[in-house]
Image (cartoon, rainbow, N blue to C red):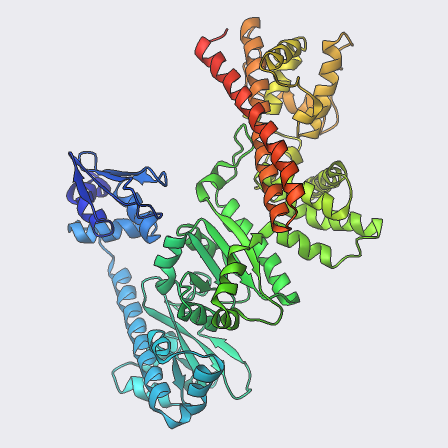
Length: 636
C-alpha cells in the first residue's frame, strides 16, 4: 500500500472536513453549507463510504487531499505532509544533511522572529521612535490595534544594536548574516542591515517571519529596502500579507494585488482583508500560481500614472506566463485551452483615482474602494487602452502601429472567444473593420514564425505555447475546422448534406464566416465551388500556409476508409459542432459587449445587443437539439 493510500485509510474525511464545515448526518452521509461559496440551503455532501465529498453548488468534488488543497490553497505535497502528520504515517526520512539544513533554517526563522519582537518593542517604547510612531498614526492613520496586529517596528540608528541584542540570546553572527539581519562587507566588518527605519515583518504563508521590509523616514536612500535573498526569504515566492489574507481571499474568491506594504495594511484595517502585495516592482510566476489556487479572480489595483501603466503591462506578461502557460496548451474542438479552464483565473485591473494610493483611498472612502475593485476591467482590455493612449489615433499610420503593438497580446490571449471580442473592441476603438485588425494580427503572427524559423527554431512543427490555432498554419488534430475540411476534401459534395442538415434545423447553411482560420476559410471557399461543379484544386501545395499542406498530415479522421455513409455523417456532425462552437463564441462576445454598454450607460446599445443575444440563444438551442437527435437516432 502506498503512503497516499495509507494516509487516506487512516484519516477520517468527516473529521477533517468537520473542522471547516458544520456537518449533520443525512442517512449514511453528511451534509452542510458549502465552504467554497455562500448559500442558505445545504448542498455540500460528504460520503464516508467512499471517503469523498461533493459540493453541488460550486461543482467542487474529490477526496480529503483535494478538499484541503482547495480550502487551504495547499499543494498536494503540503496536504500530504499535513495529513500524514495527523495520521502518524511516516514519510520518507530525511537524510542527515537535509535534517541539518532544516534545523538551520529553523534557527534563522527564530532569529527573525526575535528581531521582529525587538523592533516592535522599540517602536512602542523607544524615544528615538517618536517620529516613526507619528508617521504611522498621523500620516498613515493606523490604529494601535493595527500596529500590534502587523507587529510593526523600528530599528535604532545604530550599527550594532540588533546584533548585540540577538548574540546575547545565543545567536551567532554567522546566523544573523545568513538571516539577512547583518551585513558583512568586503573587509569582513559586520553591522546591522536595518538602521533608523520603520520595520515591517514579512511572513510566509504559514505566518512565520522570514524577512523584513523597511522604510527610511529621514530622507535617506534607499527609501525602501527589503531583506536580501536567504535560505528562508525568497521574494519571488512570497506575497506580503497572505498569511492574514488567505481566508478572506478564499471567501471572496477575489485576490486584490497592490504595490505597497502599507497599502495592504491600510486595506486590512478598513475591513478589506483580501489584499496582498508582491515583493518587488513586478509580480512573479509563483505568486500568481499561489493566488489562483485561492481565488477565481485576481485584481491588480495600481496607480493611474505612467508607472502604473508600465506595471500593468509587466503584469500582463507575467500573468499570461503563469496562468495560461503553466502547461503546454492543448486546444479542444471548441478552441478552449483545457489547462486554462482548469485554472479558473480571471485577471482584472482596478484603476485608482489620480494621485491616490490604495491605503489613502480605502481609509477615506471604503465604498469608493469597493466600487473601484468591483468595476475592475479585464486586464487585456486595460492593456490595449494603455497602448492606444500613447498614439495619435487619428493618423492611419499610428492606427496600423497600434494594432501591431497590441497584436502580441491578442496572440497570447488563449481563449478564442475573448480574443474575438478584443479584436472587435480594438476595431471599434480605432474605427476600422475587425477584418483589418485580424489581417494585421495574422501578419504579425506570420512574421514571428518566420523569424523563429530563420533563427533555427522548430518552425511550425512545434507551435509556440499560447499561440492560437487561427494564428498559425498548423492546427490541432481535434480542430473542428481542419477536421471538416479534411473530410470535405475527400468528397466536396458532402457539403450539400451538411447544409441540408443545417436547413432542417432552421439554421443558416455553412459560410466562410464559420471558419476562423484564414487557411481553412480559403479551403472552404474552394471546396464550395467544387461542390457546385468547379474543378478540384491541385493536390500540390507549396506555400507553408496552404490549406492542402495543413490537412496532408491530418489524421483526426481515418480518411483511407471507403465508407461513404460514415464520411457523410462525419461531415454533418462536424458541421453542426462547428456551428455550435461559433454560436457559443458569439454568446460570450455579445455578453461582454452588453457589459461594456452598461458600464458606459448606453441603454439603447445594450438593448440592441440583447435582441441579438436572444437570436443567438435560439440558434444555439436549435443546433444542440439537432446534435442530440442525431445521437439519439444513431444516424449512420
